[in-house]
Structure formats: structure tokens, C-alpha cells
Length: 169
Image (cartoon, rainbow, N blue to C red; front, side, top):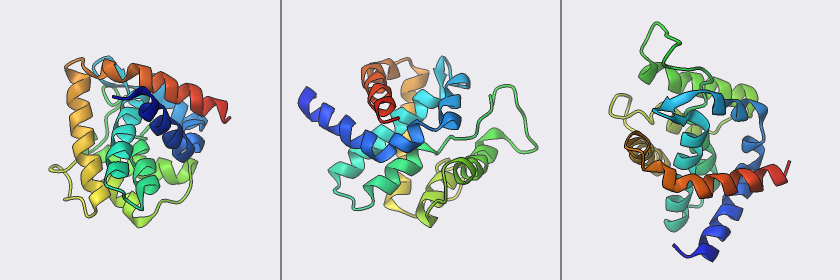
């Protein structure tokens, strides 16, 4: 990947998500394990940056909305390995992510809400938008990379995103 092109992507991505990234509740996600040694914050940034790059490549007019929803798709704020609910985590957490997003970040669009609620397809309903499909497939890919230890390749980009987004604070 061209480093200049990647730097431009990171700058554009941070412009879209800087307010979310600087939210204390979003930063709290760093304390919750997700897949193996990967925390929820890292995973959601990895997924949303992947979604951003695809939406941008597809020249989606709703790229910012899609990217922001992707960053919030696992915004459930608990350790799912320890905290149990009446229904399994796979079905519970998307609803909690929507509740937390609207409580701590602000109103979601209908598309963003559906993207978050349906990102667990095929366990959940089929996504209803292109953004929903992009999120669903990026989430599956990134989760697989997390589990096999390959998401560490994203670490330099993750650190740069965090550094740049904090500079906006």
C-alpha cells in the first residue's frame, strides 16, 4: 500500500470519526476483551477503517454514515466473556450497541441503526443496505483476522488513527 495514500485515508477517516474516537465511553472499550487478545476498541476501529476504505472505493455518498455506524457496531460496554444476559451475546450486543450509541454519541439514522442491529447476519436479519453488507462482511473478516493473530498488521494504522484523533481533542 502506498504510504502517502494510506496517510490521506487516515486523515479523512479521522475527520469522520474524531468526535466518536474522543468520547470517553468509546475509549472505555479498550478495557473489554473481544476476540482472544484483541480488545473491543481495536476491533471496532479495524472494522470501521476497513468499511471506510471499501465505501470510499465504491464512491458511496453515505461513506461517513457507514463508517460511523461501523465504529459503533460493538459499542456494548461490557466483557461478554463474564457478563451474561437472558439472551446470548450474539443477539444481545447489537441492541445494547444501539442504545449506547444514542445515549453517548447522539441520534442514529435509520440505516445506521439497521447496520448495527443486523451486523450479526446470518444470526440476525439480513442487512438492508449496502453499508450493512459492507459492515457485516468486514466484521467477519476482521474477527477472523483477530482470532488467527493476523490483525496485528493493522497496529501501525490503529496507532496513527488514535494519535491523529487525539490531536483533534
